[in-house]
Image 1 (cartoon, helix red, strand yellow):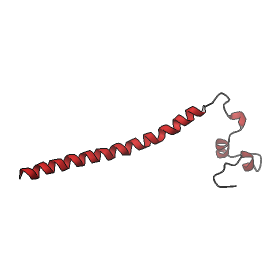
Image 2 (tube, one colour):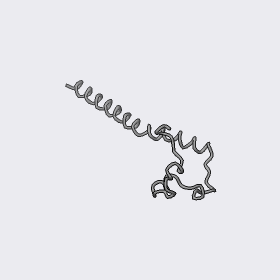
Image 3 (cartoon, helix red, strand yellow):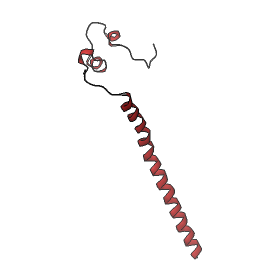
Length: 83
């Protein structure tokens, strides 16, 4: 079994009792809600929105630095032309 594979709760169950962490990570089927469902389209929308949000922050900072650099270069050019 690979390290990335999820192991069923029964594999951890050595003495019939599970720890609080095992109960939290591997709840019984009776404890899970029956009315929860997320369509595949909603999952796809959530997954596609994350990279856009993650790229927007650094991209806007980069463009701000480029803009500030061009304004600074223009100002230095104007100053050197006036000398």
